[in-house]
Structure formats: C-alpha cells, structure tokens
Amino acid sequence: MVLAYHVIFTAYGFWLPNDPRGSWSTFVRSWELLRFGAATKIETRRSVAGRAHDRDVRDAAQGALRHPPVTFNGKQAIEIIAAFQEAVQKSGYTCYACSILPDHVHMVIARHQYRVEQIVRQLKQSATCRLLRLNLHPLASGTSHPPSPWARGCWKVFLNTTEDIHRAIRYVRNNPIKEGLRPQHWSLVSPFRASP
Image 1: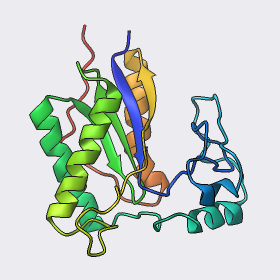
Image 2: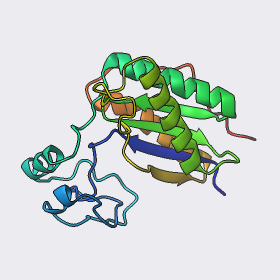
Image 3: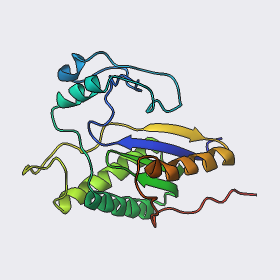
Image 4: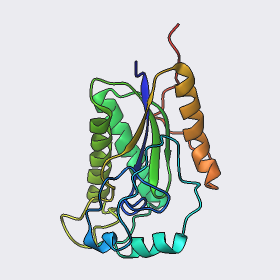
C-alpha cells in the first residue's frame, strides 16, 4: 500500500526529454529539440543524474529551447516555498521533506485523497501565481501570460514502507548539501511519525 510519494519536479529546461542520461519521456514535442535526438526513455526508478554524459550536447539542446532554461534565485525560491505552504495548508497535504534547488524541487508527501500528479500541479500553479503577482516570474519579460516556469509532469516514487519514507526524507534533506548549498528547514514540513 502506498504511504507517501517522493516527487521531483523541475524548472523549465532543466531535464529535457532527450537528455543523454535518459528520461521518462516517450517523445520530443519540440522540433528544435528533436535535432538533438529522440526521447531517451528509461525504465529504471533509480536516479540517473550522476551518469556520465556529453554536457556539450545537453547544453546545446538547452540553447535550442524556445525560452531560456529557468534558474530560480533565492528570492524566487522563498516565494515558491511560501506558495507551497499555502497550498499545503489549504488542501491538507502532509509534507515530510522539501528541498528547493535552483532548477528543481524534491518533496516527500504523504498519501492524500488527490493523486500525486494533481498535488504537484497545484503546487506548481500556486507558485507560478505567486511569482506573477509579485513580479518575480522568471519568464515574464513584460507579458501578462508568460509560459510556465515549470517543466511538464513530475517524477515520482511510491513509498510503501516506513523504511522507504525515512530513506526518501534523508535523500531530500541531503540533496541541497550534495549540491553545495546549505541545509533547508521549511515550516511546511511535518515530522514523519510511523504508526504503531
């Protein structure tokens, strides 16, 4: 039985469907990207972020995007977390861990009546609306309807045991440190307590 989810969702341009390390995508939507290869669908549930790959090819593909890849600055990250907090409180989600990095987010979220994809959509939408309202949207550039700063969908792992949840929480907490950033502590995070 699914108890929680480890979700990763990315900023626009961070992980492309034809990333040389692999992706969950089955097709490439953009003609500009397709010239760098077809989708690199993989089946593994393990992270492939550390795989060796041709960074020049990846950078060239990112350069062919319609918009520049999004990298959130510190002020934007703080407002994204504030939007996540509002969504968590409003919908009654339970978040056991959260790390926001410049180009992606890791969260461990308890099972809820809503599907995990719907939860992630709401979190992204809340953050986007807040960034727009505060004139912090990274792709706004003077337009009232800028593209989403987020990539489509999310990567998710179903957590079926308390051990799975503890492992995912450790991974999420350590992720900023692995990236050379400070540990993150957010008020939207609730401690995980396994039921007896």
